[in-house]
Image (tube, rainbow, N blue to C red):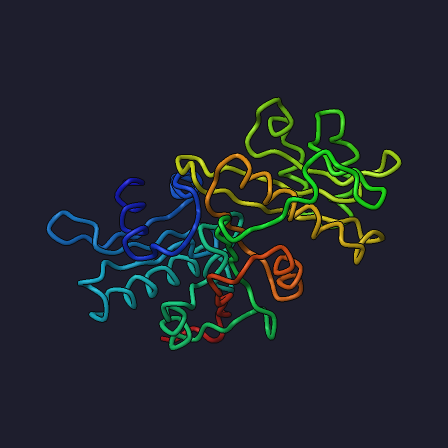
Length: 288
């Protein structure tokens, strides 16, 4: 069933950039509850739920605007309520296929009409990207020293210092930097760090998308609080992006970023390519 759901997801949401491997791993989580809408033995609609989070709700185009999506959402909310939760979330929970509801195609309006609000208030959530043919930076590369700070690939002996930095910067990223496999020779993703006087000031993950040899991604950008506003994050992003161009990739994405740091990525040439509605609904607002 995972393959069928993945195919429907790609048909309905072709502009979402998550690797096939990642999406199928999330869809295959044994903790998921899946509600299918079948027509003549073919999957025409689906809702994938984990705890109180609707990870994916999509309907094949010929069945849209016929009440299928509304029925799937109703059944999803009933299931979540039956498991003792008091809030519905559309997008990111323990993991995510999308951080929220895509706004580019107006999908968020479906949820707004059914009582979901944008839980981030005035802050936006975005995916960003850039085509590497337009990226022109030749001054420095990974391994260089810029303004007294060394930007290099991390090794296994750096893990403790990296975790200390990342814990200070963004606790939710620590789990990714604790994975020792990313520090092995030739590992993908690679970890880029900014270091001075044996202290890790910042870290970044640079990835080649599995199964898509012309596309890369950067993410989990972290700079220790006391070292922010010094250009460290921008330098890491630029050097990571240059690395991906130098090895022959044509485009780079970063996902699940937010208003406060869009300008930082913008300085490295990234542009917003998707905005998300961070949809949530409390039980007291449930439509009956």
